[in-house]
Image 1 (cartoon, rainbow, N blue to C red):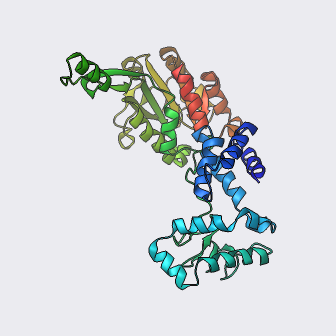
Image 2: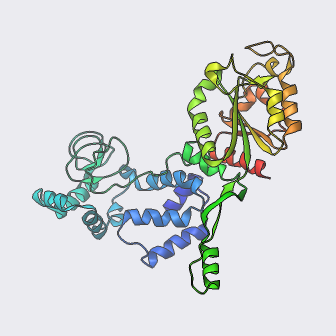
Image 3: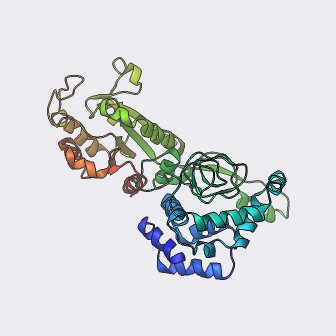
Length: 392
């Protein structure tokens, strides 16, 4: 039975080994969990998954393993014994729901009806009021409505009335190959940390307080210390407008996460490529600009620099004077990028497009060459790789 679960995990690219499968089997043999699907889910995840970036893959594989009842043979009855169903249902019910089920025939009737329909049903079914499927008013299935029953699967709109939820993906999008949300960005940014205690002593130092109190014969001697802060300095430059309009949301999430994670954060905007000026306010970009040379003079080499953009433009916008689509640039963009490279020790480019699309635009290849191929996709894995490089 668990071998199929193991195969689903491998098919979903969850890095699980036979050793971990044997550990899960051993835990079940010692009754670490019993007759509780939720507890089995958490046990399996704790044993089989070693990195939270794979939680979403695990949820999909776990759901695929327990879903698809229409493809299972009559041996399903052995997989869902009476005591599992009964104990799980009784644990989930409120006093009001127990009374309602008793008025409708009792839990025994519900379980027997579920098993009978499993034996009779031969194909997938949607709608209606009898078979196990999606929609409809049957007490068995998903996405429909019934005051009491067994929910099977995760399709359709939930009514909050199912006795048992067989599948619940709690970590949707926590995957190292998907675009990021703010929570996921914060996880990736933690790779770029260098802590130090600076500023006013306003945090209780428990260990030092205990030590000084003991030295003073038990007389309380409270000791304070500065808060431990991330001392990394980060300079963000966002490509804005044009083809980047489709990526506004994910860029907002990245910016929001950076503001939370980094005390020393500066940001500016540019369009397509960096030239002689950048700006802070997109609404006043034509009236209030910052000289790029002033930026280089103001923020020292100890800053880590991150460009965020799709790098998709005409090649001459990078290589030629006057190549900008907005103004006449006296010097080609690549000279300004070289100046960034000379001034800052660590610089990367984050691209919201998937890595396998980068080869279709010549400008992307030029940017990659200018940055010694330190371009990373805006995924959890890509962002972590970029932060790891900056942290070296």
